[in-house]
Length: 475
Image 1 (cartoon, rainbow, N blue to C red):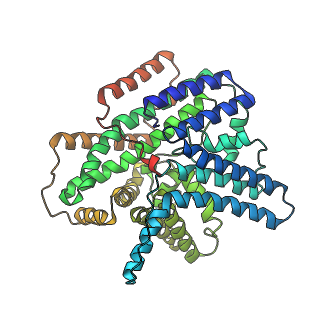
Image 2: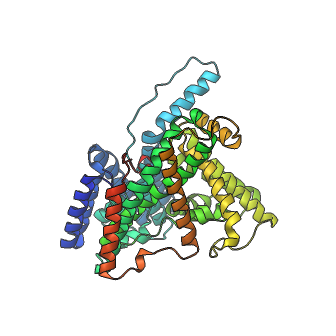
Image 3: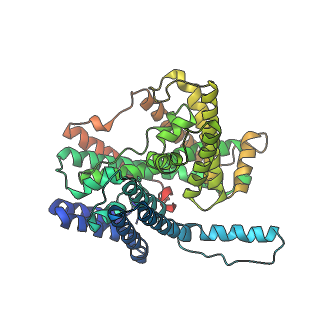
């Protein structure tokens, strides 16, 4: 059930109605029920076989961690929780990938062994809610939070339907208290929430999906694409994935806002970044900070010298790439980002770069933004390509563009894509210079109505012919 489907519209209306009428424990049961309906739509066994099993495991583990008398017992229950959750993730997401690797290894070793490759339907969002529930157990173990004694509250935190399938990956310190006690909603909550939902839908069904039409045509047949087409498709995908993923976040945050719940921002105009390190702080923030807090820092972070810092960055980004999917392309994407982060840390260590990456954007930063953007675009080739072979074909054509005609696509497709990429890029620049329109500042009822009507009209008139699934649903 996608956010851009009629079924979800009905579910959201029913969920919001129940939220308005209920309070206390009945409200938490209602939200949990609606979250299970959302996740189990079409595949009810995902709820009982995955979500409920994970909830029971982590609730039991956190209760035992809290009551344990020795550190050994606390570690036992922590490891039980982590192994259980990661075990489910490995079985459903990576078992086929690992079997293929073993079969290739046996083939290279001239061993006549072929293991069966399982074909298991991947439950949507399993990576997201696994990381969310793991962070809760780890924080309880670290004594950063006390575990809730309400199974319903804990289960609702993990399964909360706005964040369940594609995040943001919320922490218990930020979300659980908001689910435990119903906050008084103001008309501004409802207005901001609805505005953000409409804005997210506009980004998705108009811009992201139209860009996706051109991107799919080029990436599906890279050997037939002209060099300039590949560059344009790479730029288009850079903005498609940003618009698509941030649109999901906007809709999720808007729904939560209408229920009096606030999320931390998941994107901060990442293509205005002046370095790869700044990009990683602005892109998918809930994921990048999760990797920092639960993997990079425990490995030693940057506290054990430059060599160890570089090793830690490559380990973290290798696993970050693998988190996205069981494919070599995602691993190469992670390693490319890891290389960029490592080079940045080396340059900082040698004093070649400096300054405040978080300072306001100015025209002086243009070169750094352009270089960083193109470094990220190279990574998106690996991320989007169907195989490593396709990725290297595209990169070779991009970097050695003296083959084939400049374009093979139809003129209308090219013009539409160029205009969309230019518009989104310009809006980024205007936002960086603090001159872009901000709907959050709109207060007049007439202006709000006009804004809502304009977004609805744009969606009705210019929606893409192919309404694609949100990209991060597959993770």
